[in-house]
Image (tube, rainbow, N blue to C red; front, side, top):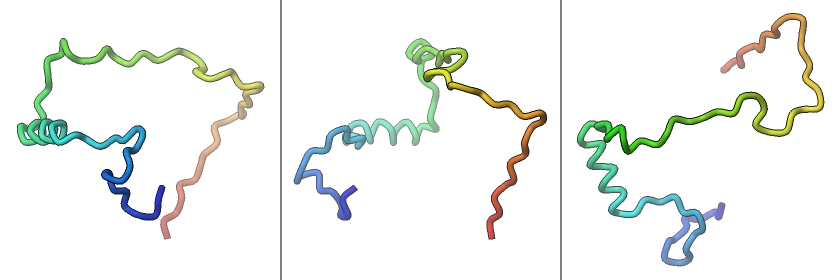
Length: 76
């Protein structure tokens, strides 16, 4: 990240996640309307998860005789 505020006019940025003015107005109007649900027919399909490993399987998996307890971090 540059150590300054990037000026849009100076350079276009790849993968800029900014909203267009029209997208921003659409979002704000939806929020102002208490975020109503849209038409269920327009919804994307439910997420499908692959059973098992989604990355190459590990060379080895270690198991313990009993569960290990991870202590909570202290906030001092």
